[in-house]
Length: 77
Image 1: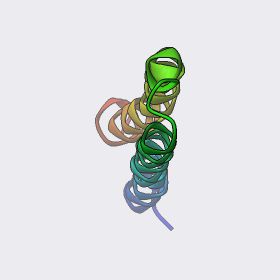
Image 2: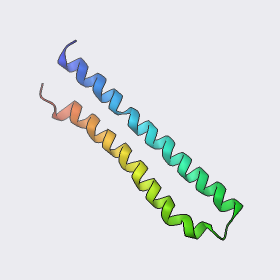
Image 3: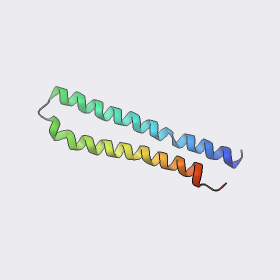
Image 4: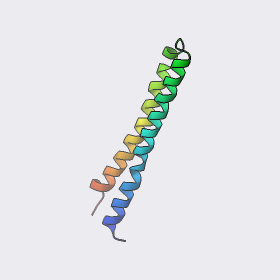
């Protein structure tokens, strides 16, 4: 296997993390909405936890995108 094809395969595998982040964000917001509809008085108290969970999950997706871009464009030829 040559180096160029290994770079492309590695970048594709790194992009799996972006899909995982999308699934994670959907689960976080879905569970928050479910909890907020069951107990609307407690929803404002949990909003900070929602934003923190969203930020951490989205950061993992951004990190995987950064790794993919580094593999594609910054790795030596």
